[in-house]
Image 1 (cartoon, rainbow, N blue to C red):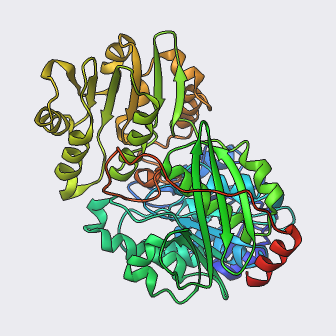
Image 2 (image 1 turned 180 degrees about the vertical axis):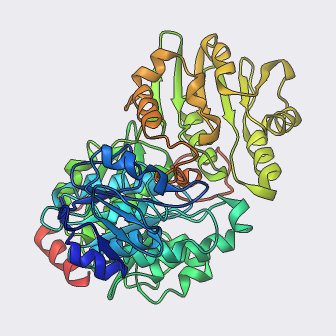
Length: 529
């Protein structure tokens, strides 16, 4: 575990210690949750609706060895008094990150951040990366994550950065100062906070603008159509299909992908560099593009083709991110960790391809935080949800009627559509259906609560376990210490916002099995990176 010296913390935060004569603490981490104090952790008393200082004694009882506070407090452990406890935590995180000489990868984007973070961590496992846990990706979560970097153990850090409105990314970028900034995509998400997609592009680009000296941004070529990314001054590593026009970048990864049964076959070549061939499980198109970003990043981190190929064999999505569960009566496609217009289209495209010639049920929940675009995007998803004899629709949430009206306009039978205010109310409809069932909606809908118990228990990471963990870490409204302002709505599986028809499901690219000398590839990429 990391170790934080008392003198360093005082200098970094411009704070002042008291109570050191009672006990000289050995601080190895920080927590903003008084109930979650690990050994040798200091409690950071944050202030918001109610004062985190009110929970100092609880934190001490639960093992806190020190406290960071912005008020005069008396307790049995040393106290570091600072002007602003959140700023102090962020400053500690920043200075600790600067002590870390190994590569730091920062990830942002409208969708696909968590999946890409997990993919990169999986492919570069040999570097023992410290990576963001759960969705600790906001101004508190990023700081806590950075303070957990173990300089002696970790050879890499993979940090997720999520924002919900303009003006938030600069703070995260300053803390992370990534050596490699990975941008997954730009798509409609958190429109209430951003207003328009161009603002999303500008905000997300700030992570790349904040890279360390000689740092890189890794992104798909379609992002170059945004002025914010085209004008980036840092070094660019760009992924582009083989048939894309010429790309002006410092490093260009050309690729072709071909779906074959349950596999995706990938040919990847670096312009003026090495060539690579990979196979991975068949996911959605968006997930495949997340994987391409991850492969390119892993190569830039020094991972060999053989290491990546081996790790790709065991690449998996998380629970509720495209999981398929089969019961005696039905097959469930569960992608309800979250939803945005882009990820909804991506998941539905995949569902339609695997559920041909079967009755289908579409369980659609709200797509949250779309602001003035709420009507437009819910209407659009309703219109592209196909009707056939035997199909059913279960619509959940405040925007269910928008879905329904759009579906009726495209030929749906009203008797085939059911509306429910809350997810548990829909459980009976799902239990009675025989065929394929598509489940997708934003976190606020909690669509997993409509699933049969045997389906929950069969998911990759049991939903029941996740629900238990969530209940244990849930912070009461009066305490401000935990990461409850996560940017969940951005955590999606889709990596490109496209206005394409579902008929264009296949990625029609050829691939070859040509190989080149592995040592030459490694040296070429290492020299350029």
